[in-house]
Length: 235
Image 1 (cartoon, rainbow, N blue to C red):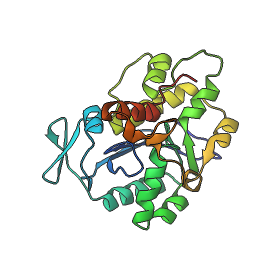
Image 2 (image 1 turned 90 degrees about the vertical axis):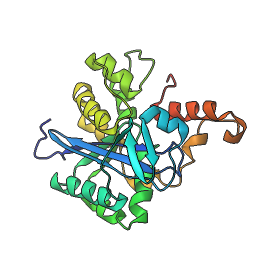
Image 3 (image 1 turned 30 degrees about the vertical axis):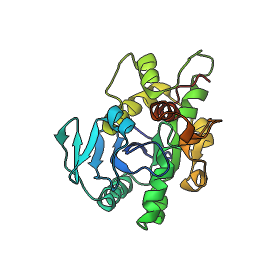
Image 4 (image 1 turned 120 degrees about the horizontal axis):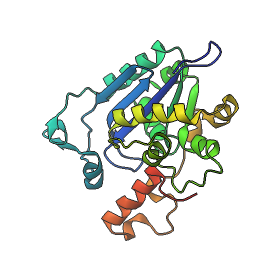
């Protein structure tokens, strides 16, 4: 996807994690910009939640990370984030885009960067962040779509299915989806935000829930949080 001289480059990014709460940890970080890709794995310091493992295929055994029962090479979280920063710098202060990242991925990224003293480096390496979920809602207003999950949008606009819940496949699909959306520069500007804007938000595991999470069965609780991550609700 070519950018004009006055527009920043675009980096599409996604995380896979040990769960869906604010205390979960990163296990995979992927980014894509045109033909350039980054895909790295981390052994998390806590166990995978059963529901997350079921959805993503990740399991941790003996300080090793497995994806669909295959051992994957891993790096420390610092190494992964430093590599991500280098990827961003290579592209000259790009915009970072992802689906539902304002509610989920960016708060986790902000916490990880802050914990390792890398927050300022990220802020200086990017022009801002854009969540493609509200971007798609505005771009496709009037189409009568019932779901704005990324998988459903890819199927609707591109006519294909792909292997979701793998960060690399997700960013590749999102890059293609963005090309089909063709948002205006004005719309992108309205949706731009910084990491500062996502701090001090409520835990996503209890968003839109009138009942304390602990009073619901575990399986139902995970199903509801997956709905938050993928935005299954009709809007």
